[in-house]
Structures are given as structure tokens and as C-alpha cells.
Length: 418
Image (cartoon, rainbow, N blue to C red; front, side):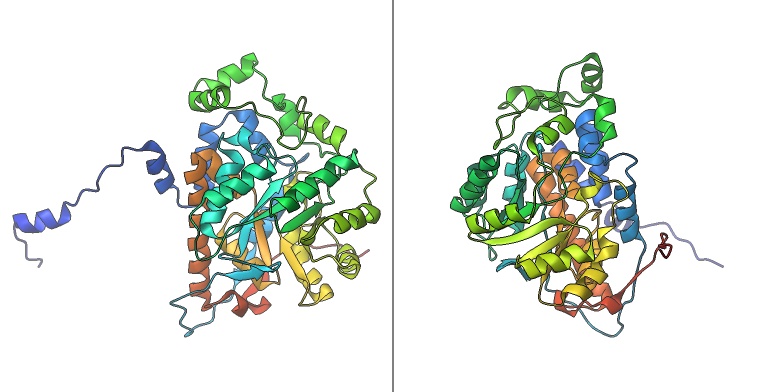
């Protein structure tokens, strides 16, 4: 029989511990976000459909994007037991400098469209966290503005670093001048991007009638009614335009097709290499053969990427390609990866299979849309905690201890022999 008694008042008081209410709506919703997907849910609620879909979507049937994310979900970890990892070191040396975490912020275009703080929020948060920030050629903050945002952050144990992503334009002198400006502003690495000779068919944008800058139509006005804060920011802050380009009108596809040049070649790479004094990596590599050719050409590294699934649909999955590329190029050549990373465990799996570094794009933008600079800080905080927890559960104290034996890539897509 259970012996029952009346609870004592002191015992009831011990149970009645009320959490102090948070009256700041931004802090409250960001604190409730425990994953990047939670930030995505908040971002979708707070951002007009056209702007959100531009960030969230991919090309055509969005197969490249969904397959990239599925590849990370189809990971099996193999933890080591009786290997204490109470303290973990997440820092890494990449391209001649330190990073407090094995990921940086990828280049994203039109960033102030998502939330008015744009690249300033991203660069500031990256500097505070001691990780690299990459500015896009199609950014909405100038090279010098990003530099200043980084310098304004209080110096930490690991300084912030700025990288610049370069498209080769039809008017080559535009690209050359951007290269010179980024070097003069102290950016230490150039991402020479090769996967955008023409714009991918981003069907969500076409269906939404999305343009730069956004146009007020009956549909956008109706969609804006529950999101007045976004339109207030858009209409009361400086005009949304490219900081590095003079042309801003039209759909995304029209802008890209007018600016990009499908004739770019190794000759263009040679010219940019001569102009650029720092490290240069090639972004958008999708085959082992190209990885080897670029290594032999003397570049400092590559980024395995299908442009976040926004260019060629059904493109190779970077995460699946990673182990083969690492075996081919050897241990000393820098290999980075992006596309599909939504969890710190994705970063850990990438490092285990041979990536020196990773880049996050949408994950950063979801945080930006959810809460501006504070939202980007929350993105980094979430990924940091997931990386540290995954390392501890694997019995790994430092990133250098990760190895292919820690990961099995499960696959749903088995190639048919040619």
C-alpha cells in the first residue's frame, strides 16, 4: 500500500518556481528556437513570401537541394566508447588563418532583401564568433561597409576574417576592380565562382513575380498585411540595390544573365590570380577531374558546391562527392564544402570525411530573417552547441581526431554502371 500525506507548504513552494517573463519579443522567439529548422519556421512567418522563397528555394524541381539535405540525414555515426571528451576544441586553421569553428558564412546575394541589417549583421556576428564571413559580388553592402562592420566588433581571442566571392562579369573590368577593392580592404581569400555561367531556372521566383527591388502589387500588398515590420524596414531604410553593381532592375534570372559570362575559362582564372595577393579558392567544383585539374593549376583550395541547388538541378551531391575528392587530391590540398548544411552534425560528418572547412548559407539567412543580427548570433550558437555535443558523443576532443571511420554514408541513390 502507498502511504499518503498532505504536502507541506514548503515542499509546494519548491515546485512553484516561475520563470521570469521575457517581454522582448525578439529575444523570446530566438530563445525558443532550438534548431535551424526552428529559425526557418520563424523566418517564414516574418518574411514576405517572395523574399522567403528566394532564400528557401532552388532551381527547377529543387532535386539538388533536397538530395543534398537528404545526404546529411542519411549519415550513420560510429562513436568511440570510454574516450572522455569533456572539453572539445572546435577551432581550425584554414587558408592561412584561424577560425573558432569549422564553418564560416557563405556568400549570399541580395541579403538586405531578407532583413534590412543584411551583410552588416552577418559580418558582425561572424567577427564576434571568430569565423570568416564571405561577401558576394551580388551583396547589398559594400566591400568597405563589411570591412568596417568587422572592425567595429570588440576584438576576441580569434579575430574575424573577411572573404570575397567573385563572379566574372561580361564587363571584365568590373570584376577586376572588385578584386582590387577587396584586396585593399584587407579581405584575405577570394572565392572564384565557376558554377554560374547563366542563371538557373528558379521557378518559385518566376511564380511569385519576384524582382529586385520588390514591386508593390496586389499580391504583395495582401501578403504584407501580417508582416508590416518587414515593409516598414524596407520602406524606411536606404534603397535596396547592389553595392558593387549599377544595374538593379528586373528578375533575378534577368540580372544574372545580363551580368554573367558563359565564356569564362582558365585564362580568366589566370588574370584574377595575378591581380589577387591573397589565397584563392574555386567555388562550384562538382567533379573529381576538375578538382585534380585545379589542384595542379596551383590554386589554394576548392569548394565542393552545387550553389545550394540553385543552378543545375540534379547536380552532384557535394557531400557524396567529398570522400572521393579527398582521396584523389591528397591530404594537403584544401577542400571545403557547402550545400545542405542545417545542423552541426552535418559539419562534423563533413570534417570526418575529409573537409577542411564548411560554409553555411540558408542557415545563416534563416537566422537573419528570424531576428536580424541577434538571429545570426543564434544560428552560430545553435550550430556551435550541436558540433560540440556531437563531438563529445563521438568521443572526440579535437577536429583533427575525426576520421572516415566515424561516419557511414547511407545512400538511396545508387549509380547504374555505364
